[in-house]
Image (cartoon, rainbow, N blue to C red; front, side):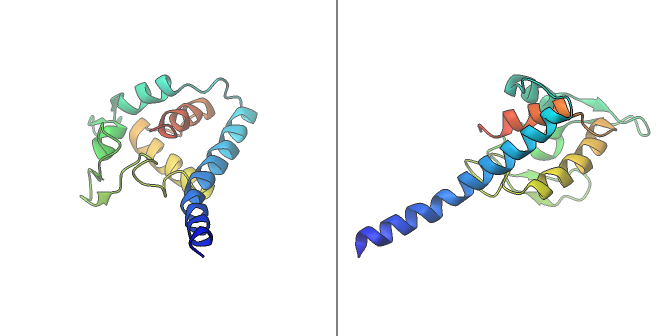
Length: 133
């Protein structure tokens, strides 16, 4: 009986990991089909920490403005003050598990931070960085 319980528990605990792997793999394949190549975690980290100037207001923006530089810690939305759960999948197993959510946040956050949508290469580099945290 205990072996069955342990087996079922182990299986259930591994589901977020496999969900993350599937979602990230699916998106990496999609971004490669769109022209992205050799996704690089170092490039993703550099882009994550880079400051961009908002063309309308002149404000400095970066991913770290809301999510912080330490992705294992919670962030806070710069405009609304709303709490943001940690980005690191090792701390927040729900991260990077749903393709639809990842795409939604890429559109919204890239437009706000960079002033445009991210390229396929940038998205792939971000995923390469985030998936290993």
